[in-house]
Image 1: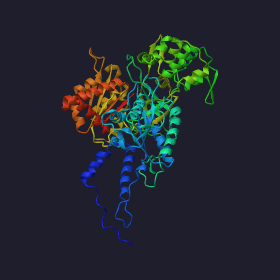
Image 2 (image 1 turned 135 degrees about the horizontal axis):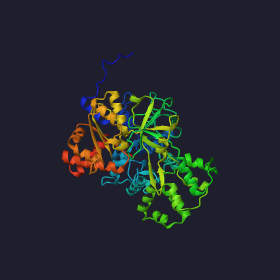
Image 3 (image 1 turned 90 degrees about the vertical axis):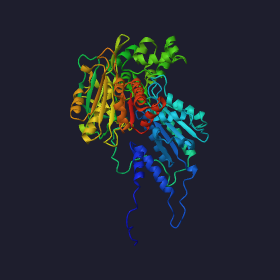
Image 4 (image 1 turned 180 degrees about the horizontal axis):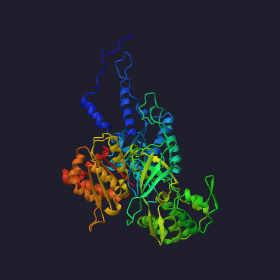
Length: 604
């Protein structure tokens, strides 16, 4: 029996350990898996046969894997990319899966087979994790790609005129760079699976044609957790958990024009887990008054049976729990225009009618369109033309470490007058109307882009006007419960201090206890000039820049894309004023923070 070695091989030198620590800081599970696979591949290439003086040959170039790159804001694109990767892996083919901001851009020129799954946010904005990828593709450094075969699956929301604009941009740009399109671009609406399912089938078929089976030492991205991973909950988006309501409390003053609720739900028995930064998906039921209004506008029978995809329900049942009524979409406007024969609808759908269409989609619900432009609809045709109801995602406002088997939400209840009648939001009204004996169908949507620093000694700056403060309540609870030593700074804004300072007592207590180290407020209507969070950022620009330059992490959350743009502009100005940057350099500074996972946004 051979003797044991006298001592273990030496550890990495300190400078290498420091580099490794910097490399892995802030990476989520997918990125860490990819990094592990990369290092394992390097190790495999240096294996020596007994008695051989030469390293084993590296994997042949024609054994290159399929690369799947995803850009996702709410998790849908990530979920579809993961599903495609699993199918390719299960077929015995080499594959790697990467979020767009973890993709090594220098490798694009060597790719052979690339699938891009990307969402479009709002009216044509990219997901945050795909911004650098898109800028590279559109920039002067983008390489010619004659060797590349590719396909793009775009996800979007047809209630916006620029539906799937980012998927279209990437698809057309790759073609312009000389790549070969393997299959037509997929464009999935919020009922993602109806388009993504067939597209994934075609993508798998093309991968089977293009790739050789993975060899034993293939350097593929691990797509499944190891044996130590916790068993997943049986709760999914398609099989939600009926969470009992524990609390439903209005948290604004009586004189506020807003209705904002603090909602507490029990997760006991669900097996669900979540982290600060995650979202809770809620499946709503449409308000009964809205369902009745649509049926009245149609002159239809609410009990008329309608069969679709092998399922039969009364018309009212389809409209109540299966179809979208509060968000108008371009496909439905197109279908209705064909029946109504109205010049105003035709003008909005014309190539030069983008502004008119945008105004129509933003101002009208389905019932408004039916009333303003009457047309005859068969009940079955209407149900088929309406978009399927989609869940709503709410930033979680609690930490499991603080609340146990509960989850808390901060919900702005949508309600307004339009066209002489009251209008409501489906999910917010559904939540607001839940009584203490009620339940809410829910699931957890992970958000790996919006995470607390791995190092609890890092400072954090949280910018959350309105209900955007929700995840920062969770952040602070988590930091307190885990004993994080880094400082915490909150910027919060709303119209009025007296009636709309959300969670005021909690923030003030945390500040008195030394757990919330700084708090800056912006109440826009409490003085003649309007003051928003971006103004508070500029006022504290010197200190804010110092916090960030000393390793702090920066977070922005809110329900308005314009707010996020205004905040970003303020951050660029702060870098110019207090960091000595030029405008281009300041923008690059912010991009670098994002690439380091030190600037994260959750904008909806």
